[in-house]
Image (cartoon, rainbow, N blue to C red; front, side, top):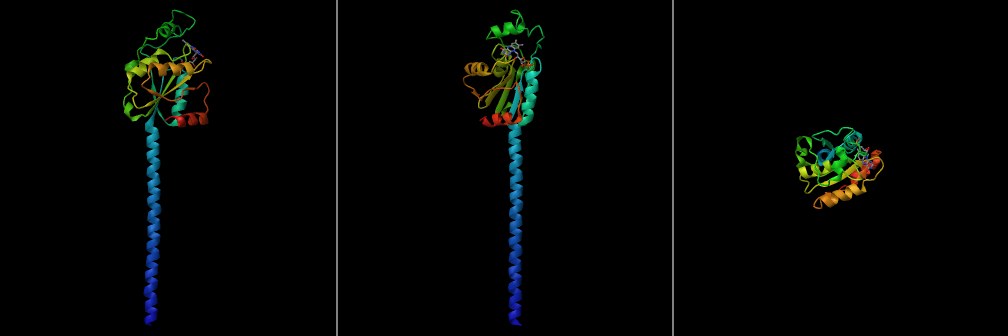
Length: 206
Ligand SMILES: Cc1cc2nc3c(=O)[nH]c(=O)nc-3n(C[C@H](O)[C@H](O)[C@H](O)COP(=O)(O)O)c2cc1C
């Protein structure tokens, strides 16, 4: 009888410790699940808050590219809107007297941006994509207005562009030369957009 009682007590103890083990395992699993959920939220928050896609577009092509980039990488959008919009006549590159020709012939021209072009809460972004159409093989001077209206210290500026066929190389070099104290990421011509390509490009930005 004594032996039986001892076995019962022992069984109860073992059962208890098994239940305890199970509880601990469950708690561990719960904590792990909670931990990874928090990590995912953090990563999403970081990714969402990290990048801003800014763009100037005179006739809509770069706007379309910018929207797709922002969508693919999950970034916010900011349009660089000229105070005075460009008319078709302004954009006539064959006309030596057109507004765009005059601006592009003067490296110091700084076309005004509606509301000044200052990005509110720029602090939250580490990476700022800057998109524009190629004008005379480089960036329109309104991009200079935009860069000079903001403080990009500690951030990475990533140029992208659309064009009638020219590449973005000279635009990137010109921007780097004009703003040697800012860090620039690899520029990309986005005359056609491929999701995987955009993701690869975005992943190289540091
Ligand atoms: C004034 C002006 C100059 C341009 N210069 C070039 C150029 O040097 N090389 C090029 O490939 N395309 C050039 N283009 C074509 C634009 O880069 C192209 O159409 C661009 O996709 C327009 O973008 P948007 O619709 O966002 O303004 C020029 C267009 C304009 C209006």
